[in-house]
Image 1 (cartoon, rainbow, N blue to C red):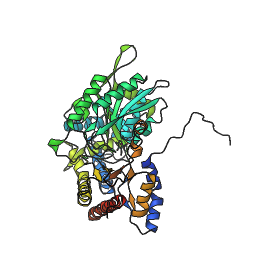
Image 2: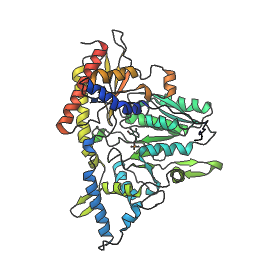
Image 3: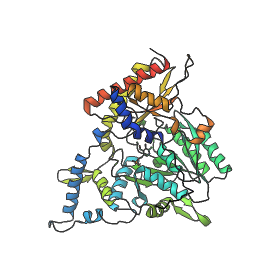
Image 4: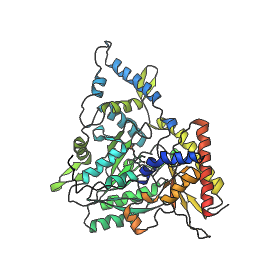
Length: 471
Ligand SMILES: Cc1ncc(COP(=O)(O)O)c(C=O)c1O
């Protein structure tokens, strides 16, 4: 067989989260051999208790039957239009009914009139990240993306695929990215000859930051973006996995400034990850060659038509079903997505409370040793080992992570890999004293889930105290 030669191809580094999930079965065996129970505080997956698709499949079938009746079809040999469409080629925008329904419901939730012609279907939020990067990447033109330190691993992984793309990262405090730092990074990138199209972030339930940005900080960030002329790419998987009271919730960027924002919606967390439903939405206009202005949504559409051609129409119609409620024999468009999210929130709210209660109970009196973020949304808290009076510093490196599994059956994720390269160059210790603890996933349901969650956090606290020498 001939050798294939690809001299320009580079092997990309595998992220810590992927390494962990790949090594989990082996670690699980080792833990079992040692008689340890595996405690899940690592995986960022939706909980199996709220992702059983059977109820959804029944609902979807009933909705499709309703569409068939609406078409006035009684003859079972006649193919209904919705079914023909679900398995056919569509144009890149996909079925208008799915986009129109989503525009209505999402628009009501966020006080915005969404134009369904600007809703570009994507393969989850991951597809949205890919799409927005692709628009700005052209061979030979160096491009710099601004993002947080730390940032979502899927974003850094996507950026690494383009040899012309670099990340300029911005440090965060408890409210969000530092606006002055952001402005300085945009300017530094430009001075070095990079084109700077956007700032990428996850303002609600930051992954992996474990907190939500304050309203004030969002406004400051928006002002920097406006003054410097860059877009904000708002990745919003946890917008509805929100633990704040309605009156305390900060506004997503796209409801504050749809012309400055590229909003990435995904159905993965409020529905199911499997159907890969997502939308990119923006009302931004870009100046392109010769001063011509074009809507970003048109550029995204052209890019997507060559990348994807079209999203699964069946999956989009299924999502449309999810956005309808059955009332008697009829189906009516939901008023809001919040009610859908509530089914999921019951589990995440409980798990989060158990995590925070146990951390407080076990470690609350050792505040000079440990700190942790309070997640306003999402699936994670960041746990930090602090420099303490005994001078001992815990390093959360790969050896420590492996030891947590081998000695305690604890699966946790180190933070260092979430810091972009430039952040680690600025501070080689970035993330080296931090862990990402997740409260979204376990293998059990109901009371057993609650018990497992409590046990996992207790085991973690026990291990953390042992690591710093508290007995
Ligand atoms: C911040 C963030 N963006 C994107 C994704 C991927 O989502 P999707 O399933 O929609 O591709 C995740 C998943 O965990 C995430 O946390």
